[in-house]
Image (tube, rainbow, N blue to C red; front, side):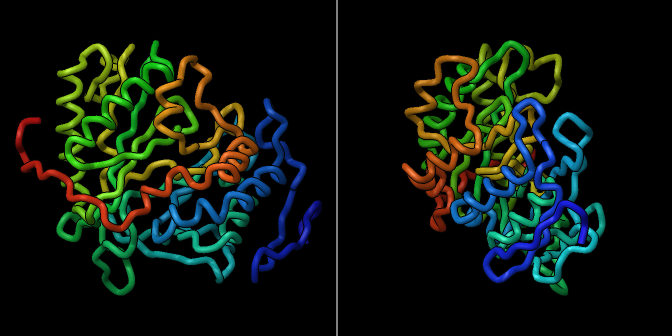
Amino acid sequence: MPPESIVTTVGERTLTLTNLDKVLYPAAHFTKAEIISYYLGIAETMLPHLAGRCLTRVRFPNNVEAQPFFEKNMPAGAPDWLSVQPVLGTEGRIDYLVATEPATLVYLANLAALELHAPQWTVEHTTMEDGAVLLAAEHEPRATTCVIDLDPGPGMTIVDVAKGALIIAHRLASDGILASVKTSGSKGLQLSAPIAPTPSEDVVRYVARLAAELSRAHPDLFVATMAKSARSERIYIDYLQNKAARNTICAYSLRGKEKPWVATPVTWDEVGAADSPDALRFLPEDVLARVAESGDLFADVLADDGPPVPRVESGVDA
């Protein structure tokens, strides 16, 4: 057994946890033990949002001030009880991990996998061959959620982003799409809405058209181009998060920032009330208290009867 380790059980699983006193957020003196405790505490609420989704992890084995690394394949030496889902795409075969139980989150937290990211589709809504999900264009996965990621450029604060989120939510509602909202755990906000299973590229085209429309209607607030030079004092509407090969930070995931901020579901009233650059920041203890008081504020995203996405023909000028 490695030094400074303990053996524990989570449900039916036996896990060896190591270096529990290691500080992974130096500015907050937040330890691996506290990270594991958070993910175990939030597991019941978080797991439904991860169900059937292939996880990309961002690991910070030293601490958040050191270089992290992205991990898609199952970790070396992973226990055989973890759920694995092969995916065949442009990168070849990747054996992704799918979280199915609290022990999975504890296992990942022990690896300092602070950030969990997932696509907008679930395995259920993909084409498979010999047990592997196919990502080729002719076998495009069908998204069950539509995400609009609001990324503020220099000079913009969460107050500006909150204003933009309210505008976008109103516009989505006019198409019958009702969005929930969460913080990104970083600088921005992300709107997510359940939709009828829809080819990912159709969702990309819809959100791209929406982004172009909004940037024309509110040129002092939004921009739909990725060019850094165009994003100063504007909010970039990142429609590419809907691509089948892309992934988005999961609700309730920690972020590898200076402090252990969490990607936190919030109410629209909270968004409307945001009045300072430090508004809408939540630490793990805040999030657990919020869930205990209000339940899962992102539960509506789990609806399985989402509306159809308005179709945008390929090649049509947004």
